Amino acid sequence: MATGSAAKTDRGRSGARAAAGARPAYRTSREGDPPQTWTIREIADEFGITHRTVRHYEDIGLISPERRGTVRIYHRRDRTRLGLILRGKRLGFPLEEIRTIIDLYDAPRGRRSQLEYVLGQIDERREDLEQRRRDIEAALSELDRFEQSCRADLDAL
Amino acid sequence: MATGSAAKTDRGRSGARAAAGARPAYRTSREGDPPQTWTIREIADEFGITHRTVRHYEDIGLISPERRGTVRIYHRRDRTRLGLILRGKRLGFPLEEIRTIIDLYDAPRGRRSQLEYVLGQIDERREDLEQRRRDIEAALSELDRFEQSCRADLDAL
DNA sequence: CTTTACGTTGACGTCAACGTCAAGCACGAC
DNA sequence: GTCGTGCTTGACGTTGACGTCAACGTAAAG
Image (cartoon, rainbow over all chains, first blue to last red):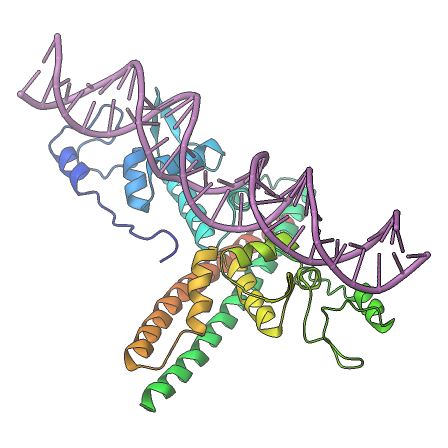
């Protein structure tokens, strides 16, 4: 695997701590209901990345978690964005381009000119993605042909 | 466009020089038939990359052009590999991984164990590519839904 | 022969995307 | 209290993928 894997969703230990009532003060979740916020470590573990990576994404403005005092608090909105970021990375987009993409999704759409700009951007994105899809299809069919050739060689033994 | 474009196939000037009979000595093509070899500049221009990039790919062993004296001569085999490399790049693979892929295509396949190894590698590659395809499909359908939403907003004006 | 164009080899620079310390605060546990 | 754990901010290091620059060779053209 080239890119990130291991989304182990390892919420075991912190869950146990929560059940023991020893949840840190900056965690707002009340007894019983599932936590609607996450720490940087929880987010990082869940997505299979490091806290340093999460912070880097914040540094360049890809996510902007809440601050409770000095501590970062991640909400579902941040998780959604992180998902988009990582999918963009799996597709090989640079982070700068990923930013323009996800910023597009919550760009202002009040005026007609804004909407038309957004629609234009959508078309560009689609062109790009479809080019990538074509590349993938080509690579996959080459791979298939190559496998056939190998299997023929194997049968010939 | 994030990745390389501009494959202008600008063979105009060098073609004119060839027609004038002023082709350099290291170009073997006889009068009349199309050149079966290319210089680094021709290759770079044709693929829309720089000669420095081509040399870099040679440095890390992705291509190994013929040397006539000190000068690099590129054959169709090199162009094929360059095509694979650039497609891999469009798909976001790192060069090291691209090397393992294209090396796979001309790996030794004599013994059964070798063939079985290659077949295993093929499966890994396919998994990876199919994951990327799923990511692309997801991104494209999100884009479609987003466009519908924008068009609805536009109609509502 | 000199110029001009293209080719060559290093060596160093740069930019993105993080990794890797170091040093410090804040909290609950003991 | 102090200990450990987790979070924080810098600041610098690293790796991949080239870009840039200098210094030079060589061959066709004028």
